[in-house]
Image (spheres, helix red, strand yellow):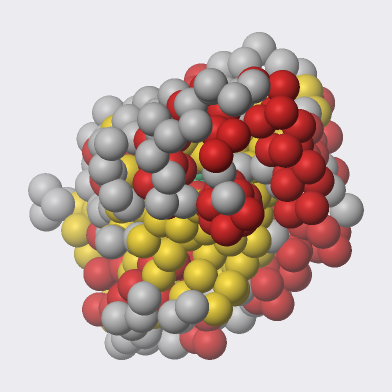
Length: 418
Ligand SMILES: Cc1cc2nc3c(=O)[nH]c(=O)nc-3n(C[C@H](O)[C@H](O)[C@H](O)COP(=O)(O)OP(=O)(O)OC[C@H]3O[C@@H](n4cnc5c(N)ncnc54)[C@H](O)[C@@H]3O)c2cc1C
């Protein structure tokens, strides 16, 4: 008989188990069950292998980046906020951190692996028994009370409380395949439909390898601008647009596409120049090039190679025409194409390519003060499994650690009260 079983060894589950074991101080047994060969496989590949573990922005700015579940997340964040996480990682895990542009915080070593190993080691030191290759098939319930878990092997393990921390369904090769959603559903919990979030978008082809820095992207739904982001975008393969600003607007784009609405992105390739300044720059470049230079040479001065034919076509210009012969309307169309290059969005990429999962366990049935189920006694939730998601920038791991901390703390608090 365990006092607490945590299902899932991601950041949320490790935090919940370690916190509960620390609070119990050897007076209770905590078991963490992980279905993969080692815990925290996803954490090890986060932040392009560097793990953007949290964001040091002040609370209000932090919460502006939470897309869903803001109010719900607040008590967990109060209990273990970004400052507390930074202190915990540096002092208790012994992992020095660096703070980068946009408040993003990473292990100073540049290795996500270090953060994952340190978290696992901390949970073990706190007294958590970690069992890998142990996929949980179902919650063991008697009426509306938790009795433990049932493994896929059929083995039953008794426990007085269970924290469900199985993650979302994105990058399923890391172990997050939605088992926890199924278990929560079987226990009577509603599941808000799952959608890929922070996911690349499918656009027109021919731009493979193109990377754009310092551009402004507008998301346009049914002809109306709904979101604007400044930063980097890239085309990792043909017909796929990714990069930070695409991922950020994808949260809204996915829902719009699913609703059958017309979605486009418009890229301002020269956001530092107003249309007026860009007109003057064109006039200057054309004058300097002289009468015989073609539009191609003008575009060479303004754009990386893959974009030159695309923008010439968008502006209705032949690259062979003389730049000096461009009429006023020609120049206006070129300015319009440079300030608002339109790309129809055909679709979004699948969960296998999504950084996080939107949707999940319905927050209405979970107490935000304790993360306890309102339906099943002894059941708690933590991490991406919940219907909470945020932008890129360290916010999602912070949400996993905050909810893990609170779920672990309340689960063992309620054990001590029993
Ligand atoms: C490529 C990539 C990069 C990312 N980079 C960042 C970043 O830099 N910063 C950031 O904030 N966020 C990032 N994220 C998101 C972040 O990794 C997740 O939000 C976070 O890991 C969620 O933590 P979790 O503990 O809830 O779930 P997970 O990390 O998904 O962990 C869930 C665990 O549960 C286990 N499990 C599942 N089912 C069972 C079962 N039936 N029995 C036992 N165990 C089970 C899984 O194997 C897994 O180990 C990234 C995600 C991806 C995919």
